View (cartoon, rainbow, N blue to C red):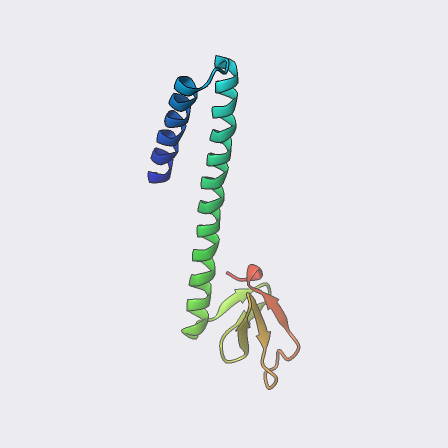
Length: 108
């Protein structure tokens, strides 16, 4: 919510600067502010989406490290049978899942 407030302030400031210091037509100023608004909104959306994914990954890894079972497709993944390496669960050599490589995106 704070990001939206700053975005509005930035857009109003941009519009005032364009109004006071340029010879552009009103329509051109509106187009410039609109393009900047779309860019700001896209950046806010991307950052929120990225934060949600990061939080989900953090919670998943935390559960894995605490020894909880994770449901990844049809396989129950835990730290007794798998290692976590670079967003992937790789089965240990001595487990019954030897050779399994499971992406964290498949896990709940």
